[in-house]
Image (tube, rainbow over all chains, first blue to last red; front, side, top):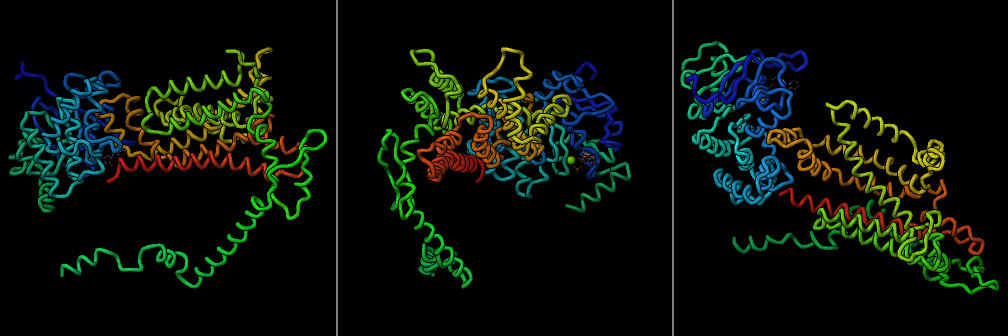
Length: 250
Length: 373
Ligand SMILES: Nc1ncnc2c1ncn2[C@@H]1O[C@H](COP(=O)(O)OP(=O)(O)OP(=O)(O)O)[C@@H](O)[C@H]1O
Ligand SMILES: [Mg+2]
């Protein structure tokens, strides 16, 4: 174990405050390469903040974050390296509305990775086929449904060929039918062995693909366990309460 | 069943077509009918009155007087009064080209043509490539050569002999061509929270320039600025006015651009960051293209206002289009005929401003088409 590949992500006693509000409290988490971690927890518990610290959309104030062997500091070069290797999918898709689907997917490879355009387009079409929307390549994001947009967003992130994928509630802005198509895409991605950290309340998805589920509450990681243990045998009152609430909601 | 469905494909008769439009929009109620009739009457009356003055009773030419000057007496004495278009025929070249040597006025005329061609080319989105920058450089150099001369066998013409439409176009074009990039940088600088010095500088610039009237800026440029310059270094008056304009327009445009930057959702910045784009890649590829599209209407609004503001150089004695018109009006030969010249000037300004406004709407539509369903 010790001689195996280094962990993909290490969070070591990470603390973060917004003003005087302590939103991450001593958060420690290690994600191994090819591991799939699902993060859940009540609203405002700091899930987004934690996942956004991993690619430094938010900066932490105490503790260490090491991604793919590079520690996150104010050093811009380290940041560039990490952002190339970490793809992110947002709740609100955040596609670039003035570019076509294909251009959305080729932009970063061409400008950041300096991939030749033809090659980038070929790869983009590849990924668009994988998320099953190659025929929409020349449309603009505004012409697609929410589910299609989110699948484009996944393809866009994959086009950078990242080692790690972060998902922040990728399905919570979608209607039920569309949730299914996006989850299927994510399951297929998980089966390719991608390292994934996914904030979601889709417990079916967690059971099916997660190696580990992490439960956060009030800025802390309260429990971390296999999905089966987590759902069948919650140890803390807070998790029990949370599970009963989301089960009632479904 | 089927047949009635087919029939219903057309809206009921009387709900479309010009008659229906008139009925709903102009004669919908007795009140709107009354307003329609009243406005129609007034329009007709004034319209006919104007046609009478401008066409029917107009005087198109005047005889030459004894000293070779035109004799405009009939314009002053004609009954009923009509427009004296002869003044335009006589003064058009002075108004358009100022005191530029008469035989060489083809040069400013060609400059105006180059400007128009440049605007035409730049308007088409197909031409928005790197080469366009080259075309602009070549065209503006050509304009410099044509106006100054002194090379290629062209007689040298100093700037204080320039005047009329080329001056207005030079001030406006150079002004906007420099002010616009400046404004984008200032708008970005104002949002650079991690570079406080840059931010403060940008805020100061915008607030200081916006806080004073353009007239006083022009005065400062023409009167005070030379005081600070070392002896012998005295940039030309036109250049100083040009710089004042660029700074002025830059401050206003910067606020418009900033409005566009503010309006973009945060997610766009985050998505660009998450993909690893650098600051300038993010700004140039994601943020500006969207932000500028959002602010086309206020941007063009500022452009138009600025185009007309070039006429304020009047107060520092530069002979732009409007000033040339006023000088022409002061000619004793044409005493009492001013309206015609104003109309002529108005028509020229209107043509440019209207073209800008039309163009901005076309641009908005062409961008809108790409984006929405
Ligand atoms: N930019 C910000 N400024 C100040 N407070 C913030 C900011 N972003 C988040 N917070 C606060 O930090 C806490 C954690 O927020 P976070 O978005 O991480 O929660 P979350 O677990 O993702 O919740 P949700 O399930 O609703 O997305 C919340 O109390 C939130 O109000
Ligand atoms: Mg969240």
